[in-house]
Image (tube, rainbow, N blue to C red; front, side):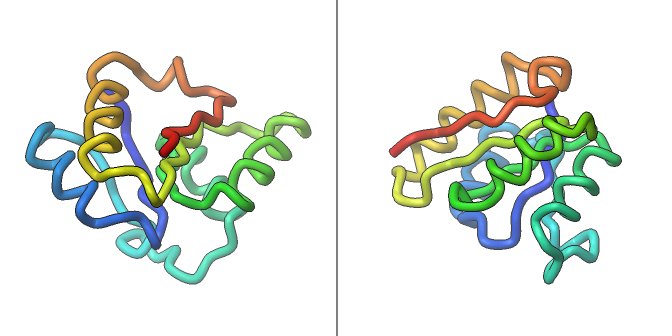
Length: 116
């Protein structure tokens, strides 16, 4: 089981579906921890400092900032980028498997994509 930090624009239907399938899933939203208008590098730093994998739809900037953290030796617990056009059920299925089959050690310095 992994702990997630959910980016501000992430699909709420996916979160609801994941919560129904995995009631114990541990996720917080950036807005809940005071990061609503925070730049991606600071969100990644917060996630690393708080032991959370970032869940986002932002494939444009977040992966680059994540790789930059790794390149300079900063901690980066991981990023899951879900395509925002992917069917909700498919994303929920993938996140459920990720939650069941992985732990934090599997995500260190990893950026992974849930495609359309």
